[in-house]
Length: 305
Ligand SMILES: [Zn+2]
Image (cartoon, rainbow, N blue to C red; front, side, top):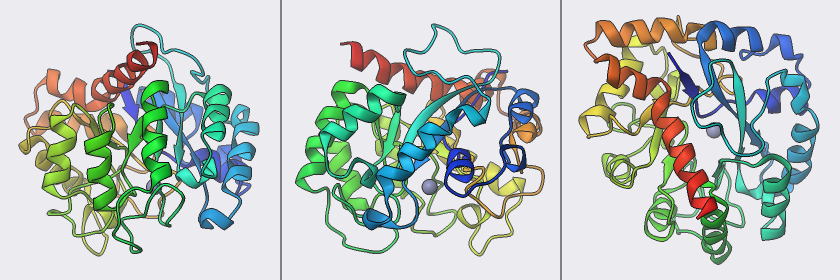
């Protein structure tokens, strides 16, 4: 079965934190064993905000991408999902663009990012985060950026964005909003999770929600189990999200996860659990990878239009 993952921080771990590739949660071998066909590798701006050299971090990650030892799609995707592990690039933390559309085009040419998380946990030139800070919506540059992302076929990732910013994206972006690695707030009351209204807006627009495997986003206070992953999957499905649901593991960016879900080689176990839980084969194929694949293709088609 084709499996796809919308978010990880492996490139940051290797290029900025200096971790050995073989010590990361995501390795080529584990991707292959888990059946992962598309792994999204984020260029994470870093935890220093606009003053933390986000652009330089981005360049360092691009320079280190060969260390992943996973072939990356830096141009159009193939017509059908791949059977062996491949990667695509995303950006997490729009401060990497330094408030400049030129920078956006530069990253687009270098690595073809498929999605940009407009903020990480700090206010930047685009908007403000879900985790504290101003409650205002997108700034003028944020709105201009959305227009350019629409042209380039880059999905607006709202995973770290505050609510006012989210609704600006929902209103102004032609491409559907996505949340690459977020869960449901009603099931785990964390600022990083989505309200039902946000999840429904993503679903109605044909976007994507990647369930995050970080314990503290799965269950209040942490200590999450695989049952908590199922609760969030069920919750999103109950909102009508069977065509929007997927995975946003956050591997290499998390320090606590449900037992049995610690790296990509554990995906088949999760798939088996979905089978036992009563999901049809067709629905599982969508959740496992086709929904993410489809929204990536939708974005790519918008670029060509
Ligand atoms: Zn994140």
